[in-house]
Image (tube, rainbow, N blue to C red; front, top):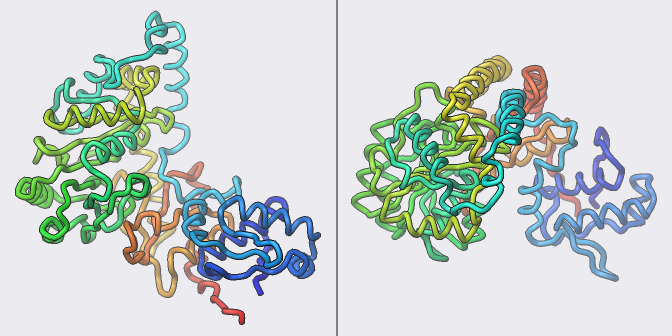
Length: 460
């Protein structure tokens, strides 16, 4: 009979019980259809009131973890583990150390943001900026986007650049424009979690392409093209999320050639490219006629700047623009104006340089803390890809460190379809408030990995 462990958990008792239930479902200690203790039995074992257990079960039902049947009791519902995988980063205490979310370091863009908002409030252009704009973006903003992309090493022109509500909106618009429900989409064998979510919503089938430490393998891509009938390849060649891989130039050339032979459209997500001081040329520079190149401001400048730019081949421009309009009439013009000003006055380049400097410091902290462990880390990357020592599995580690106040992202979120989850976990280096908090969080991670996972004991 299931009995949760409530020691060292923050918050009200009913929340602690619901959190423990979520962790045990996530870690596999509770399976679909498993019957939970009655309210009275669990209250007696935990030394709490029946009302507390009732509130805990109600909270678990609200989260989609359990279902209650009058006269039969409460059971773990189908799909509960998927629900916990999406919720695990949020289950940890607000006081936890964030090693899960990939975000820019705190304290870099705030002053520039405040100054930009003050300037805009007094600008004679404000009335226009708070009104409707073209769904492709103001012309001045498209010009700035073309300049931003050119600084990354890809020559484009403003009439091929669309302003989107962040890179995620651009990825969604690309898939909507290029795919029909049921179509296969080729992706890396571990891929950005947002692509998984989009594919599920759009009823697309993700087909994984084998990777090594440098990214996808051209031979595997060619084999998938021959057998899948896919027309679209989505990938992140520069600081691949979550593996931190950097795709070599010769592979970029090979992928471009394969895409031409099989008439693939490439969706290149270059959201992290500006974080590298000396990045490789974008994949789009090797196949500009068939690549939708996507970049954005949220990782390099500030998350609240939900502004992305997409450079789209002319023969795909109309479909992309229609999809962008259908999902979001326009990117927020006020935010786009801030990005334009920052690109043109050099603030964007300065903030990117400051971000790279802080990231380099965080990476140095990680190298010291993880000495002796196997991990992959690219210069400029917000995160590293940590190989787990035996017998650890990612879900066990996420649950174990969560109980100790550290938040990680479930590796399953990066695995397309029903592919096997690799024995690795993405560790964010920039989610923590500062170097000291990062060192503390990594210390918990190391201590946990040097211990053994809590054994799963089946109870008859």
